[in-house]
Length: 211
Image (cartoon, rainbow, N blue to C red; front, side, top):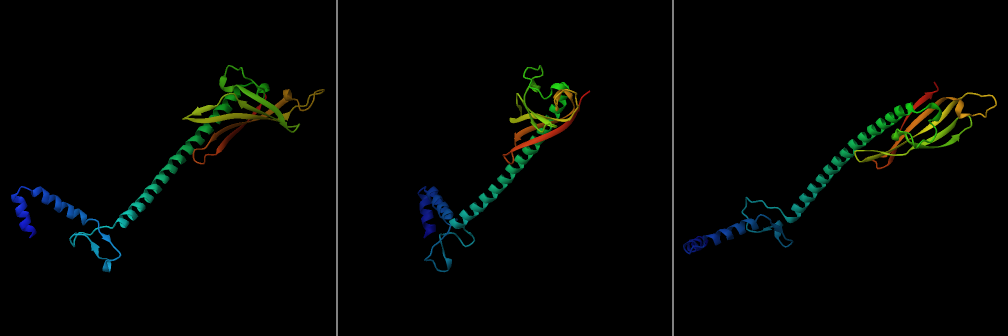
């Protein structure tokens, strides 16, 4: 019967309509639906025996598993990128601290713990407070007048001056900062770590001795 209909349609010039119907029937069998009333999990549709279809639930489960896997890979990739950025930021902070420690070598020994916002070396302009600590080992804290920005990351730096040895001077109060012969400089560089999103500080230390 179907062959006869095909011949008739062909004779009438409607072969395209038959092909579209055939394609519709083939595609309709690609997704089977198992209904509760079907015995032994009978699949409804006109797919041939060798065409194994997938239920909508199976497709959704497969897509969910795929999305979980993709999300996991994306998370690992993001963590790796942040870890690399964190290592880079640490290296930058150490380099800044080293550079500032070396730059402070040019500051006169007697005034390194003093405020100076007018020095020609703008990177060494600072505001200092103190002393704190004990009378025998006073500590001064100096904050830089400007921050440093590298790769869109802001680094704040400053330093402390600890008077470790103070020479005795007859008739002068002790401690007397002008008579100190050894000062410890601690340069601190602070930034926000990209991996932990917390503030971190790198500290480098050097002793300055009076000439």
